[in-house]
Every structure is written in C-alpha cells, then in structure tokens.
Length: 107
Image (cartoon, rainbow, N blue to C red; front, side, top):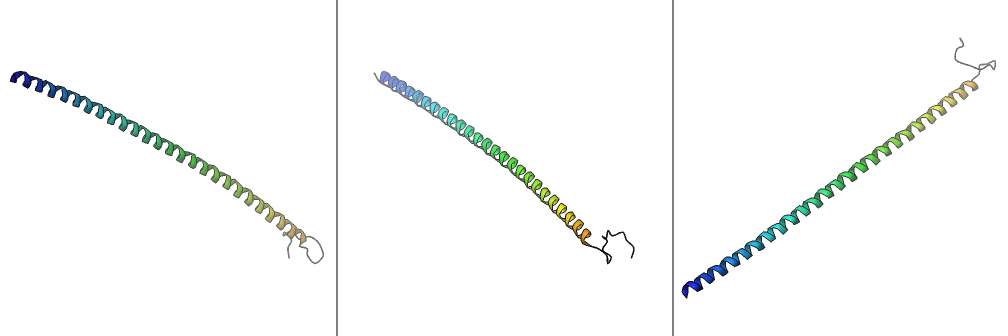
C-alpha cells in the first residue's frame, strides 16, 4: 500500500508540475505578446513624431520662402520709390537759366 500512496503522490506532483509549467508558459507567452504590442505602439509613436517633425519642417520652409518673397517685393518697391524720387529731384534741379540739369553739363 505504501507503494500505491507513493506512486499516487508522485503522479499528483508530476501533474501539478505539468500544470504549473503550462501556466508559466502561458504567462511567458502573455508577457512576450504584451512586450511586442508595447514595442509596436512605441515604434508607431516614433513614426508619428517623425512625420510631425517633417510636416513642421516643411511648413517652416514654406514660411521662410513666403517671407523671402515679401522681403523681395518690399526691396523692389523701395528701389522703385528711390528711383522715382531721384528722377523727380533731377527734374526739379535747374540751372540759373531755368533749364533742367541732367548731370552731363560742363561747368
């Protein structure tokens, strides 16, 4: 009878270990799956951030281009205004006899 009790104890212990091992495998599998999901989400977040940075850089480049165009227009207007003022000043300059002075006369 001792042998039967000993054999039953060994069998119960073996079944317990097998069940424990299965739980451990399930737990390890769940942990691996969770880690893979976390990694995937983190990689997706990084991808989104990189995409956002790219969009911001593109917008900044567009803004810089627009600012350069505006500055060029203002510079052209200023140059045109200076040229018009110079022409007006040249037309206003006359010598003592009332003839316009064009800068090519000899004194």
